[in-house]
Length: 126
Image 1: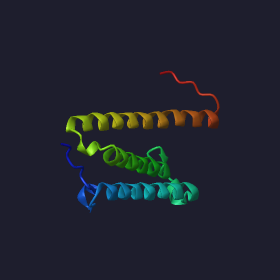
Image 2: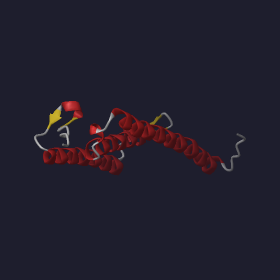
Image 3: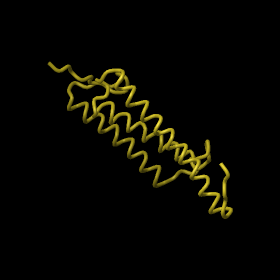
């Protein structure tokens, strides 16, 4: 006999009566987050164009909102919440390290390409 899925999001702050309601609730949450990303991408508010830790604050906001969406997609739609702790950790930590590695490559190579276009040819000795 299968066990029932948890019908809540935001660590229990929002509860639903059925799986259908929960699916619609998570879909609405993901739609709101996507709408925020689209609006920020279109208007690009000037205060968010300041550089923070090597990138514009707006880019950091996009990364964080994308991680929020990825979390809710895997946690609720893929039922990762109902899996064993070991499997959850294996999936989540693998993704975390991959994302950190991709951010490192983005910052490292993006800075190099920028300097090549800005200052001319640059050769590095590693």
